[in-house]
Image (cartoon, rainbow, N blue to C red):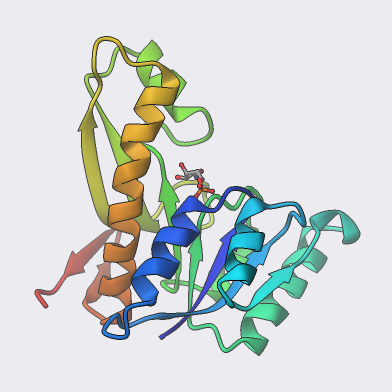
Length: 201
Ligand code: GRF
């Protein structure tokens, strides 16, 4: 299954997905790595690995819709069937999300539906949470919402900083994103209302 990965920065989740896809037995392959930021470090890594890359600088477009039409055209031309958002820092309009319903995945650094939005690790520490984690979900128009595919939990330790906690969560992100992509590529996911049901492989 051809996959498009949308990034804006470092791209460590993209790297984890690309490494999974490098295994010929994995049911997905990277058809495109696209960034809205020409300076995204992940782009260089992808290009060096010979992965197809594209840059769609959002500032070059008059509005969100024009930007998203350009992104959509790149994805379509690359033959993309599933999209993984991986640290992609632009909110997508309902129009774009609906064109890709149940084929658009996101990873978020919290146990959704808790802690939607930015700065999750700081907010988890401030709230005195003892558990934290990450979520891969299907994207719906409302930010950080949609049927949950996979989650992983980590402990919050007494001496944690936002950085140490982020690193512990990120290690789990790199594990569960390829897992969720595999489930989707193998068509083992049935969406029913607000939830995903996963068939055994
Ligand atoms: C990850 O923590 C992701 O969950 C969040 O932003 C971070 C992106 O990191 N949305 P990377 O670019 O994948 O390294």
